[in-house]
Image 1: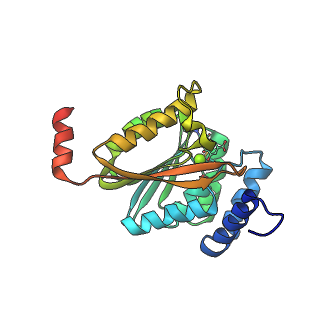
Image 2: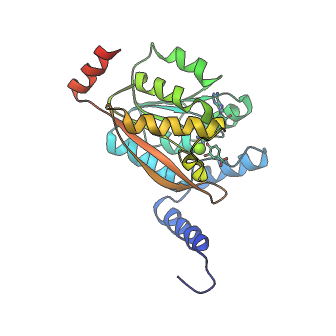
Length: 238
Ligand code: SAH
Ligand code: DHB
Ligand code: MG
């Protein structure tokens, strides 16, 4: 470490190093961020590195049908939408009309409106309308933290065996370490992590990330078991 550089400076510089080499943004992705800022949306989208990880997970797993909960301006939506095949589909759920409209504009600009769709409404309501549709290969949970355990329940119903359940912000600047936490978002995130870790149907890990303000956070990556005995055991327990 160089003189005069704290640990945080080095981490910031290393993140820039990773993003610049491994996850460069094109003009459209930069335009999304600029528009979101100009329109006063919170700057809480995934980092370029996490956007790239989501794209990479889609390519590695061969995911064709993806579900996103929490669109914002469509930044993560574009990273994932660009990674799915033309015959694939991405459904992103968003409660704020203003956010959804900005995202839709960029989805069209990216030429992805044949495969990417933003559905407006509280996710717990729009999720209920998805049960008749085909199963998903991957779900990305990134909306209101209080509902993460409920979103996990939905993801377990909607994602096929062998599919992925990914969730942003599962470490929350270290808040999850707090025993006896009273904050609803913190408690729900703790429940999410404990359940994912303990569920015999899931094989999972958390990777460290940094949020927009430089705080430490994490992304949870879980694979739903395609072991029929695990699936059957679950079936008979329910
Ligand atoms: N995935 C985005 C960031 C999402 S921020 C990206 O990385 O680019 C969280 C989003 O979830 C916000 O746009 C917020 O309006 C939305 N949200 C919050 N509560 C919600 C709910 N109950 N249903 C659907 N969306 C919700
Ligand atoms: C924050 C960051 C996020 O990625 C998110 O989805 C919600 C909130 C935050 O830093 O406050
Ligand atoms: Mg997030």
